[in-house]
Length: 279
Image (tube, rainbow, N blue to C red; front, side, top):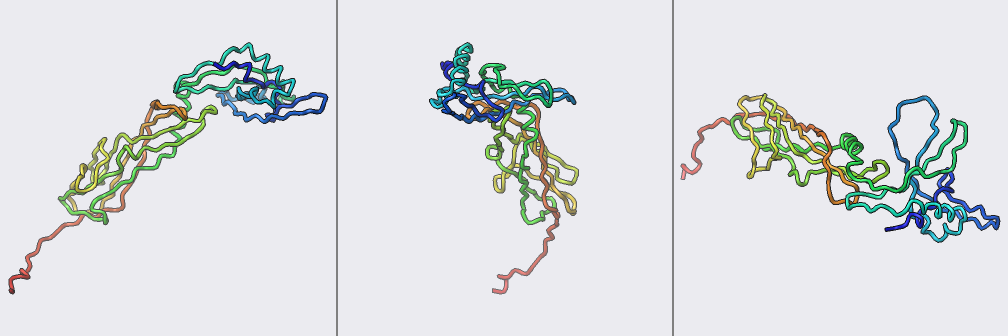
């Protein structure tokens, strides 16, 4: 376990995220702190903001230079009351302590940062709502729709083959930040609806395969021009960056792909002279 008192030196923060030693010797120390804002859902109000929150790194006191500041050293000593840092599981992440700064009105200066809550372990369940929102805002690239024959025509009463990518290789991922935590979002195709344009649809979990291992085919009966549409259903998962376990996101997303116009032609047999008959 790591003692928080050996890792916190934060109450002397200015609004710019810097710590200063006010030692009369002029021996000033500046420590830059990278801070992230915690976003909270609050009712709409025209009242001025009177509270703001920051999560600030817990290991600042480990910096020897920071210990030269009397204010930092005093803050570290006061943090001893927090006890030990919690132990997180492999799928959790340790959030830095949450600090709050207040003011009486929108013209008053902000107060110095004070501790609102200690460090805590955050797991997938704590990010479920934010992860669901991030998944449904994810820009998923539609699955590629492939048609064989590939040249914009097919033969009436013969198999027209359709397929897309293998689902194992078509998963799409993105990395974002949720509440200041790096999180991976993954979209996987799970269901395909093939609309052949002649009133016939087929729903499969199979992405299909190209000739000669094809698994999804359709035969047209009329000599017309059609457009094939593929609607792909995607399910989402997320995990904290560095974790090994994915967690499902509620709901699904869909994308749509369309083919170029497909002309259905008829083959007409004709009798011809046997070119070998003259020999």
